[in-house]
Length: 356
Image 1 (cartoon, rainbow, N blue to C red):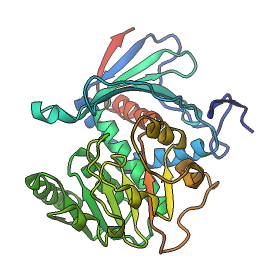
Image 2 (cartoon, one colour):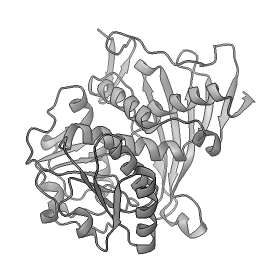
Image 3 (cartoon, rainbow, N blue to C red):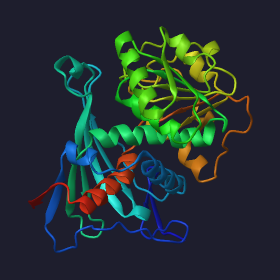
Image 4 (cartoon, rainbow, N blue to C red):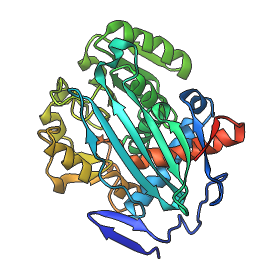
């Protein structure tokens, strides 16, 4: 049995394994190697890490989280503009021997300057010495791990025969989430809506070509939600949300992943779900205290995705349940993904070595 230290709902595993096998990262510098690898955004994007690899890493991580075998303190942040954030996100996954932090910003108005909404860096540290051994751009990782987390939740909560998807907001997350879902389900039809119609049409053409499925741009949020098996809303996170999705649009047996918190969902639609889950209960209610999620089910009704992955809470129980899983975005997602990127970069000799 692992030895656990418990404090404020956080767990530090002194000795941990996964299914009896300790999983060690390859290529981590030794304790006397005082240099680090810098990976630019281009380097990260050229590593060749696949969505399926990231989904598998997150599935393992959520099992560890459900067992209490991870450490993830609350993420502090600063806020220099309305609806913008800069967050520090540390985490440790002993089973992966992965420790590090993401320093990430989200600025909704950046598009006006042709800049990305999300930007930042991830630092990985040797879990034995604490020495940093890699600094990498986080933009691609943030996108792919968010989609992968939706796929993990969908694997637990969506009907196995789900074949239709509704996407609201056709940006980076709209693309990553659809790619992730399509990697786990046989998707036949997608309805995509964006407040900018040209963006939705471009998304439909590009995703149809890339994924080999029928993606149709639609004219309203209602068309993107009604009768869909899986629904993803993936716009900016807003304290004064649009909240246009009505309860009756959400079909019986459907699963939804509001990546953008409650920015598109009316409170009644959230509260009336048969199952309401999240990737981290403590963060969910922290954010409610900060002014988001003004109305959600009481704590006793909220299920943690880690508990589901670890078999401590039920998955979908019948084909009629309407299930919503709000993935807030965890440091654990990033620290599970970043070692894959580091190892692939080492294998391909990507990046620039810097002296500490």
